[in-house]
Length: 126
Picture 1 (cartoon, rainbow, N blue to C red):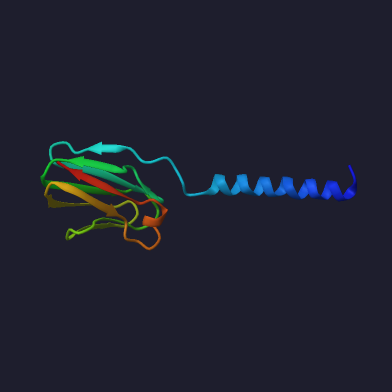
Picture 2: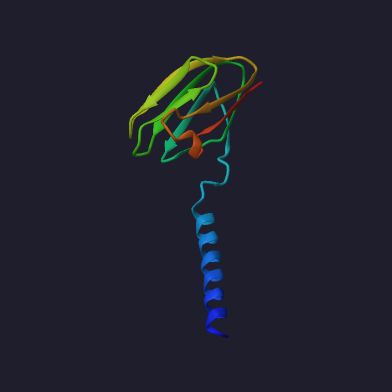
């Protein structure tokens, strides 16, 4: 191999390594599991930076939500289009009850940047 080809080969190899390294660091991760509400109550764990659930399935009516913040950052659990938001400091637990009609609701963490990192999901109410 000539020195010029060697440099080109090294440049291409470094570019490939960089692409794979960036892919390994991306925020695309496996979707969090689905949880089904039991007895009108659900517990959601907030970690840094994700919830332990992606989709919540519930029946229409009152829903007691318990937010357990197992992370080292402040987190919230807000149901969009409803007047419902829980805020928990690190290692804190908060609970509240909301009444949901049949439909689909989006939820998220309202701390800046958290929802864009995956702290969001939906509640499917039947």
